[in-house]
Length: 349
Image 1 (cartoon, helix red, strand yellow):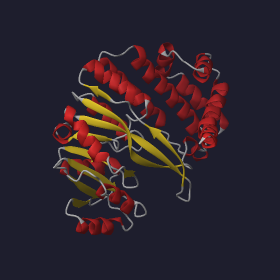
Image 2 (cartoon, rainbow, N blue to C red):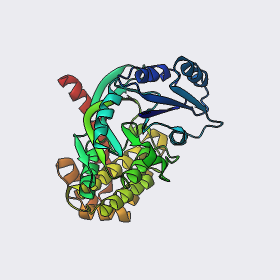
Image 3 (cartoon, one colour):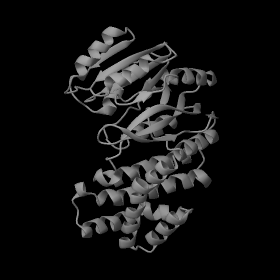
Image 4 (cartoon, one colour):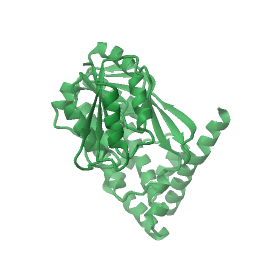
């Protein structure tokens, strides 16, 4: 069997059938589907069983208790029998030629195949209001230097962090101790950075084959998490380790992760200003300064070479510790990204 498609299922009775139909519609037919019911409270458990009756390529695993997306994926990973494993979220869909494109890429004998995504932004009524393609370049990495460059390219195109746009060689990944962690923010990244650090060959293809549903009403300003900055620091530390291991802690690769850290600082500031954070202006500014004076932040500022007006202005303010101005600029940048840029794209389209 060529592919195992692992689908964690929880609270998605509205989307599950559409997801599964996109899998059945594949032009490449040699695959199995593993539906992992994560103790879903709706009709999903019954729906999974009904789907399995329609096609003998479908297996259902009913977990005895809810443990979250990452652990549901781990359950499917252990049960997979195909040569390669894909993870598809049960509220998303994939292009009908996804497996066929992936099968062609396997001629290079990669440990991982990566492809692009189409981000489908929906309003509260479930209507798609705009789409955005994020795609990597066609690239094959089979050495440390090439793997570092692959990491840079995938990070720059914003596709590295996801697990749902990749096919992992089953024997390779099952042989690792690496598994998905139980964290809501960067579980895919934590899995990928460790797996990519151990692979020998990776192939990326410039096709947007995965359709990722994103609600427009969920933004940085509405998604406060007190652990965000701590997780951002952990992410950056792992990126540093990866680059050092691949002899690439310099140049464009280094600047890529330094820029990413600054972006996460912006995100942390914006999240702390959200209503759900329930923090006073004084407390918001205190936290912004505390994160600014953090040893990691100060080290990043020393090595970061900003390009563009926004990053140059922000890093100047950060070095001068102009906290109130920093908070204002971060909020302005977020507003522009969430409101103005989509509007401009819509007018152009």
